[in-house]
Structures are given as structure tokens and as C-alpha cells.
Length: 556
Image: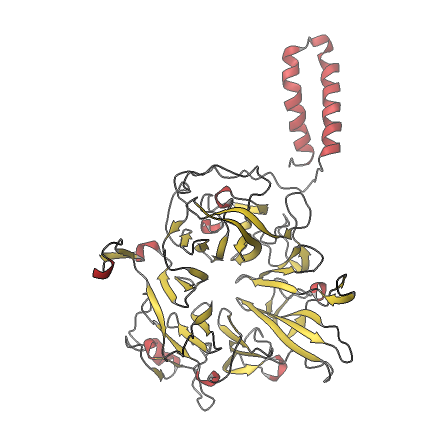
């Protein structure tokens, strides 16, 4: 889109130039004026001119070498198109664009045309995704310093991966069979000095990528497997199909706030951590002393084999959980009945424990009482816990007293200095969950049931840097996306740089509301450009990173 009067002047000069060569001087001025007037009239009737509109963004050139050479399908109406916006720092949003580029409004990179993913994860200086075949691809300057002609690199393949989680220097991948793999985020540390080959796989290529598997400390029951993982800054949480909760340290800082949950109620020290923090033996847990003793240990936490054991959280043994979520230094677990336990860092009130707990560190899983001021006859249960950095969101379902209709609401707590609390409040510490009014308690009329019903929240994604994306799922139509919080890198997609303290709809290229769809795709390609599925159900989903956002197509 052209920018204000300057853009009109460019249009005028472009229209005036040729006519000076073809028309005599005596009538050139009059004719040129007519042409300019007609051009301006046509342009004003067909184009909306915004004085503060950004300059148009030029898509990157198609790279046919790494993408398999399939032709561009951008002009096709049924093309699966991924949208990205915000800072491309470290080439995280698009590896084919310079890291200095900032994308102010949703933009569609060509290299993801007709690509549906199983998962997408964006971190500060590296990113990864799982394509439709279950292979992991990595990119970003934190992964490797590469030229703009290089695209994502396939790293972990043949493992049928369904879920990814990233930390500063690790990539965790969960397979469909329940195996958790760990590999380094840096390409130079993934190379094996000597490729591994086994005699029973003599027909296969030798393993050239260095990765490890995380194994549980205790034996699993029949059919039990890991079904979910969530990574914080220094720790990993995992959930099994039977509802057991495990945690694993990523580095020596994994339990500085008690976020591993290894403390028993009788223990005072918050440094009851796996033995991996003290030695190279990973088969037991031990209680270390003060932080000075812990930091003086010689254990090297730079490699992926620092700790390859997942430890069941002792105080949660025998308690079935339906979800685990990790914040930067905090941990959350939700039961099937909708109760929530939280522990770890709490200096910003990110656990949501209210004024009853003023400690900056909670080492014992404690119940979060959601909306204690409500009537005792009303029932409240948590449907989902979302966390990012020091900000937490609780999606709750509330049934008012003497009313059959349920209300779905979003509560936020923690560090909202950028407006991430979503209620026109800028506070660096919100200890009690605060209701996000704009997208809470919404109802619609269902023609099928002839009754009013609540509009549920489909998903919440909170970035480590303080902005939030949320999607609503009305029965009557497509899902719209709302964004709020930090906006210094244009991560809210509104073309402006000021933060927003209340949810605002994200707009698309035509300045209409960005609506997420679900449909049957004509064809789905992997990241090598090969068709891997036809006529398969896909839907759009959201993902956020440090100062950036994305809407991508995901396999249903």
C-alpha cells in the first residue's frame, strides 16, 4: 500500500512520464492533467489510503534448492498459507529473510506454501517445526550461521514426532509412541565424531545426528507412555497417559525456585534435586545444601546428557493430572476435575495464589483458588493453564448458582508491565488472577439447541517477552484471533509499536478480521516439497515467540 500523499505523488509521476514523450508540448499539460485526475479518481475509489500505513513488504525469493523445486502456488485460492509478523531477529520467523527485518503486519512467506505442520516452536534465537511426516526441522542463527539461500535443516527424522518444546539450548521432541528425544539447539554440537551404525540395521544409513532419549526413573505400567511435555527456561515437565507427573532438570539452575517439585513437605531446603546436579550419576535423587554448595559442583550442564532421567514428582504420586505446563521458572499441574496446583517462582504473582502466599518461591505444589469471592453454590473449574515467561493464564468454566448456562472466562496473573494482563492494567506483579473482560463471559445463540451458550476459548499462547494471542471458537463461524501485551517489535500485528492492554482483533492484509479456518486440504507437502497427503483435514493454529507471532496450518 502506498504511503499517504507521498505515494500519490509517486503515482502521479509514474503516470506523467510517458505522456511527455508522446504528446506535443502545447496540449501535453492539459492531457496529463486529465490523466492524473482520472488516475487519482480511480485510485481513490478502489484503494483505501492510510496516512500511517507501513510501506509494502516484499516477499522473499523462492529457493528451489532446499524446497525440492516445487512451483509457487501463491496465486491459488486453496493454498495453505502460513502468516508471520513481528521481529525476525536471528531469522527465527523466516530463515530466508535478513535477521534485521521487522514485519509489521501478517505476511505470508512462500517457503511454507501448502505446508501443514504437526507443531511449530519459536524461541529467542532458534526455531523448529515438525512437518506432516513427523520429521524435525531447525533454523535460526542460534542453530547455525547461514546465508539467506539456506532454508530449514532436517535434523531428527524417522521418529514420528508430534510435539516440540524449546529451551535456550535444547530441543525436546515427543514421538507418537511416547518417547522423548533431546538434541542440542546448535548444529555444531549435533555432529557425531563417528557415525553410529548397528549390525541389525546394515541396510540403513548410519546415524549422524547426536541425540539422546529421556527415560523415566520408575517403570511404566502396561500401555503407559508420555503424552505431553512442557519446557521452561531450565526445567522440563512431562505427563503420562495415566496422569503421572515427571520433571527433569535441563541445567544447574533447574531448581533455584523449586520448580522441579522434588521437595517433600517435611523438607525445608528448596534444593532437593536429582543427583545429576552434583555428579555424572543420574540414577537417584539427593538433597543438596544451600545454593553456594550447589553452584560449587563440577557437573557439566552444557551437554544433552547432563540429565537423561525423568523423575516422578514425589508429592504428586497417586494424584492423577490432566495437564502440565511450565512457565519460565514456574510449574503448573491441572487435575481432570479442574483443580490447579502451582509451584516455583512467584515474585510477580505468576502462580496466582493471591495474598495468602507472599513468598517469592513456592517449593511445594499448592492449590490455586480461582475466584474465591464467588458464591459457594457456584462451581468453577479450570479448563486450561497457559504460561509464558512470568505471565500465566487460566481458562475457567464457571456455572453460576441457579443457572444451567456455563460461562467461560480467562484469568491472568503475573508480570503485566506490558499490558499482558489484558484488563487495561499495567502492573509488574498481579498476585490474584484478573479477569480479561473483553473475551470473557461471551455468549451466542445456538440455532440447533435454541439456547444461549458460552463462546469458548480455543487456545491461549503467551510469549516469554510479554504478549498474548488468544482464539475464540464460536459455533456460528470461524475463529478470530485477539492479541494484547507487549508490542515493541510489532508482535501484535497491528502495524503499530505501542503496547495494548486489552485484547484487540488481529487484522489480515485486507484490514479485515483474521479468522482461523478448518478445511480439507487439496494437498499437503512436507518441507522438502514432496506431497505427503491429499484431502486431509487441517486447521489453523497460533504460535508465539520472543517478539514475534505466527498462524500456521496444523494437521487435525
